[in-house]
Amino acid sequence: MEKKPLTGIERELVLRYLLDGNVPVTITPISSNENDSDEIKNLDSAVVPVAFKAEDISVLKEGIILLKDTPEAISKYVNNPVKVEFYFNRVGLYFSTMLKSVSSGLALVIPAEINRIPDIQVNKKYDFTARLIVSVNNEGNTSFLCVPADGFELFARPIWSSIELERQQQAKSLLEEYVKEAKIKQKAGNGLRLINICRYMVMPKIEKVEAVQGRVKPFDILFVNHERIVFGFEKNAAFELSENAEYPVEMQFVLKASPSVVRKIFVTCKVDNIFKNEDGTKLAADCVYTMLQEEDCRFLYEKATSSLFI
Image (cartoon, rainbow, N blue to C red; front, side):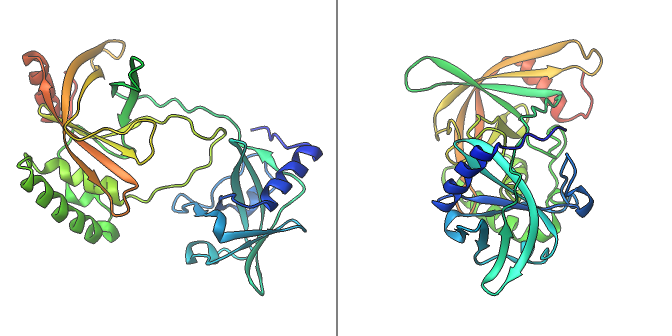
């Protein structure tokens, strides 16, 4: 992957921007043998990028970033290379440097080379996707792509063990809260989808700096069967679903027997519940179908009770 370094003038503008403050950054440990490579890779798959708010960093005019209140997740990588990512005028930038320990805490020296984050669009192939059709600001209808949440097998019975062991206690607390909410509203239904909702809520949010800031991201699909569908999204998403609102949805299935053939199903659904995580940054819209053709209901029922496409 070819690097796209800033010119000298561009780098000076970025340094002034950093000095002015109000710049959150994301730091990720990287493999030492990748430090001078065109392609910088994470240290291992278990490494999670650590986001620092603007108030948690300060930048000296000498080109040194000082970190405040650094968590153990990043402190243990002192004297190791890291990748630092941030946005400048909505453009994603990064540089690699060494994480150092100084008298005031941890520090990063801004190197001579600052690069643009490559604009790589990864097009995943899904057997099942959906389009959520909404009216935005009374300016006509638009649609948002919805895809299965990462790591979720939708047409399989949700099981508690799919939640990481160290997060199950947190998930249990949320489950108790969600069941209580649903019962109060008399909209409990089959509680299986709550397992997937809890799993989604306790999954760590990975702060990823992209080539361009603010792109519209697909909604996550957390659960689907012949009775309901559940969408996951983040607070301040391009569109937030509302409780008791009704939305048309177009589902599309790729048939395993004939990959070139797709089946489309049109439904309308109403949001029964909006569930939130502990800090309100993640939401799940639990929707029940209000219009579904009988043959489509049969198809979804068979999909939800079988791992094979028909």
